[in-house]
Structures are given as C-alpha cells and as structure tokens.
Length: 82
Image (tube, rainbow, N blue to C red; front, side, top):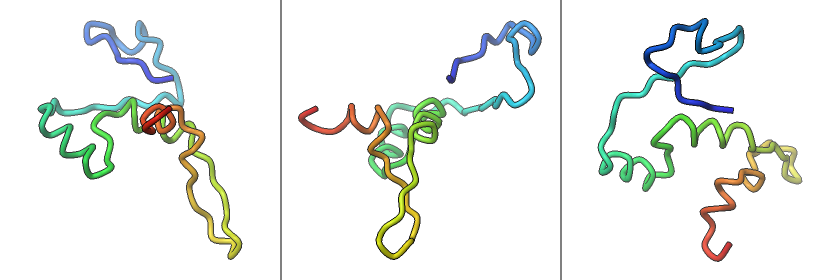
C-alpha cells in the first residue's frame, strides 16, 4: 500500500517502520507528466509501485523470463474497451 506522508508529522507519528520505502518526487508539470507517460514511463511513484506489486514473471518456450503486466489492475483499467 502506498500512502502520501503528512509533511508536518515526524517518522514516529507517521508510523514509519523497518522496511518501509520513502519516495521523494520533484513537482512536474502536466506536460512533463504527459511526455513521460507517452514514452511508457510512470509520472508518479504510486503508479510505478502498483505495477511492481501486480506484475507476474513468466517464461517463454525457450526458458527466457519476461514480465507479464496482465495482472496489474492499472494495466487492465487503461485497456480500451474494458
């Protein structure tokens, strides 16, 4: 689960624990976000970590591993006609 942190809280009050990941992101414009997304990149950490959580590894007939994005709810939600 990914949640924005409250800036006025300290780590203890935010309930940060061992193993938690804190991401920092510079503010980007809507145009910059669109340019990243048009290249197949993610413009925010929440969407990127959602991909990591729901991806599945599979192998083709030659045994080469690849990533299957079909398990990601976000990928399914952005598919036309679904």
